[in-house]
Length: 171
Image (tube, rainbow, N blue to C red; front, side, top):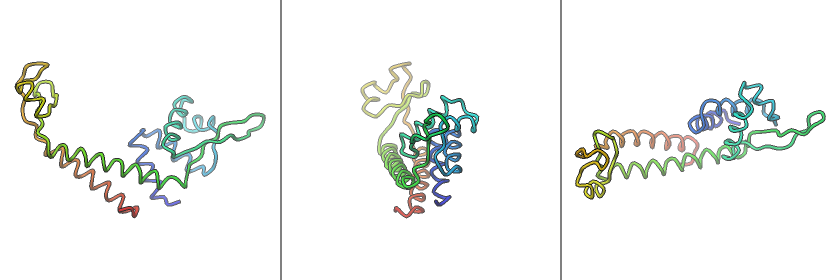
């Protein structure tokens, strides 16, 4: 399996669930086979409930799966990487993120937004008009929000995701 794909999936996992989830994913990749659940927490130094929670998150994403494995006198639940699904999962996640970012960027670019300088609450133009351009919470005069910084940030993230999709060969 291409280590670049593994790195991209690991980055995605870390962004979604944190460093420990990434560590767990990389551990399963390094093992290359089914690993009994009770060993995972011990070998990584995680509490068993924390390891179980992270395993469930990754399983819900379709990144890992489990099956029963025999060990001495008992049957254990073992976890393994769904290698064949990784590229599809990564592509689907990137596309979903790209669409959300595009939608948010369009909103930031085309919507007049006002905010309360005291509370920081944002209001659409319609909400600002209905409140006579005053904050309903504290009574401060609403100010027009400059979304140019947010638009630049969103443009940067959109470019990063597009570049990742191009690198994979999807765009």
